[in-house]
Length: 106
Image 1 (cartoon, rainbow, N blue to C red):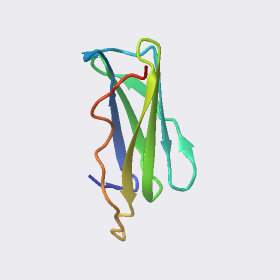
Image 2: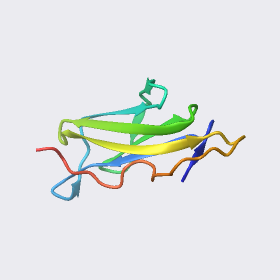
Image 3: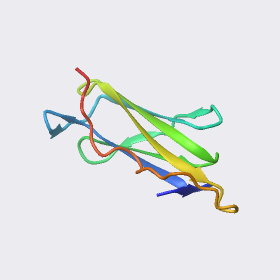
Image 4: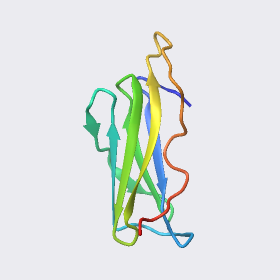
């Protein structure tokens, strides 16, 4: 899916330990925009082992998402998505939003 400038981007991370959904004690989400700015949207928890964040797309291009977990689950994961200008239809390659799995760091 490709997002347009102004769209909300729903980000999701799933955390497991030994294939069992597990909540970390703390999670941060940082969105690195192509213009060099970083944004840390507020992270909330959904179902056990699920972290959620919403980011409003404002810069055209590839965005990189970094999730960092500490506590019961410790590690980091990366994702990416693209944003286009809906007025000019300038689009890049779309990538799935958020993350689909998590492997804790050892």
